[in-house]
Length: 116
Image 1 (spheres, rainbow, N blue to C red):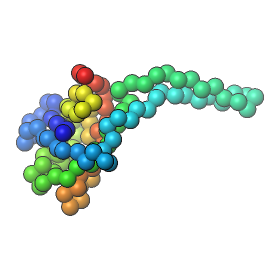
Image 2 (cartoon, rainbow, N blue to C red):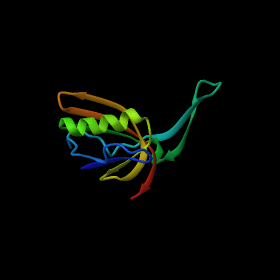
Image 3 (cartoon, one colour):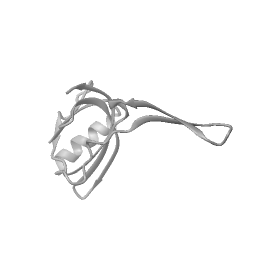
């Protein structure tokens, strides 16, 4: 179960969706890795760690028309939202949304993790 709510603007309220556990990806991390070329043809790779702010959650769900309208309203506002899931409570934005015949796909770009 995932909860999404606007931070500052009023919409139709918070949205709760039940993610498709097979396709939804909430557990991927991307490391801050940098590669620099050297003059001798080799390279130097530097690993700067992993941060929650580098995460993107990809969520698939089947939704009804009312829920779809609420998610679209949050997406159209272009504002930050709170995103609550099994991984914690996050601040960020819905960066992509696709809705086809009740099948919802959203990408949530994390700004920061606000609690565990």
